[in-house]
Length: 253
Image (cartoon, rainbow, N blue to C red; front, side, top):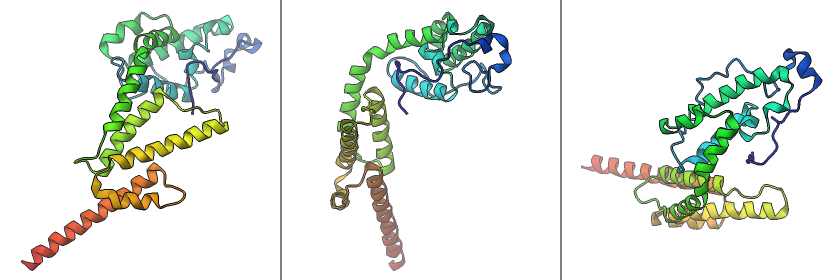
């Protein structure tokens, strides 16, 4: 699901005669509908915004959750108060306050005052973006460097793979591949998948060289998840063989 700051979302709704006629027509698909489970105390995501380091993950996570709640427009400014009939303004104020509370619940204490004194969710979203989103280039460079130098060493395969995926996922969030569906976009996606596979195999210990060679003999070439599953299986077989050898040695003595 591609979500960006400039896209038009389903939360953009203009006022209509029905808005002024009856508030009951604010049904569950309406951006101003307040679900009983939507409360000020909700903590929507586990990531806390403390500064520029985790801004991209925080903002991406918030957009995904709010998109699912049909409230992303409050953040992106596509669900503005003036778009609705005056009879719905109080309802807009109530939900704007809830969204502000959701932001407040996911930022560090030193950023709390920024949210408290904001007039609407869109303003605070833009304020935080202007403060912390300017370091994307340096953060992307840092992630690229960390991905390139990450190796397995003493980690088990699952731990190494998790660390690599975490870095790659954040990097992709900062520099997402094109998603237009055109041939160039599909080619870029395939190339990026291949790079992920190469990086995973490159960082594995040399003891997996034989297993790596087997992967390169498969046609079509395995993706990184399939390669990961194969390496975990190789690692598991080694542990079982080691345990068996130890057991036999003990019995022999």
